[in-house]
Amino acid sequence: MKKEFDNLLTHYLQKIAREKTEVIGGNKVSKAEKLARIIFDAALGNLVNADGQVIQGKPDRVAYKMVFERLEGKPATTSSDSGKTKQTVADKVSDQAKEAIELAGGLQNVS
Image 1 (tube, one colour):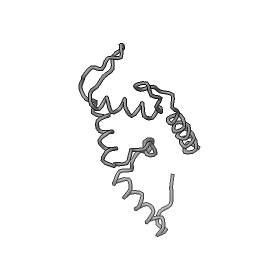
Image 2: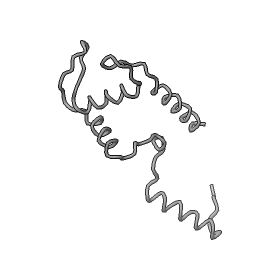
Image 3: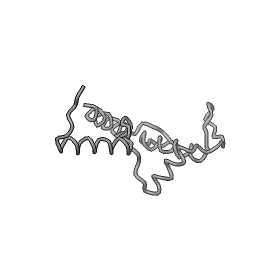
Image 4: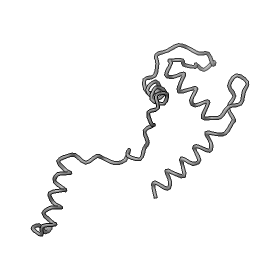
């Protein structure tokens, strides 16, 4: 159910991102392009104040990393694993040992 919701949400976000409703330099551009420009500006440290003036600030590390990785061809991280906790090596070994003993018929759950 969650995966279906995630796919549906992604579908609508992509649809909205393609909408050409934003204006840059007198030209209508997509929301995705506007967002990409905001991220790129943040990576360079270009901040926009309330008056719309660009102020040179400190580059944003997260934006910088995102731009760099996209330009270098590294795939974007997805949220598919975000809710899952990775099993430790000890837990994996323990689970494998339990399975092996169960297969051998020597262990039954006793509570």
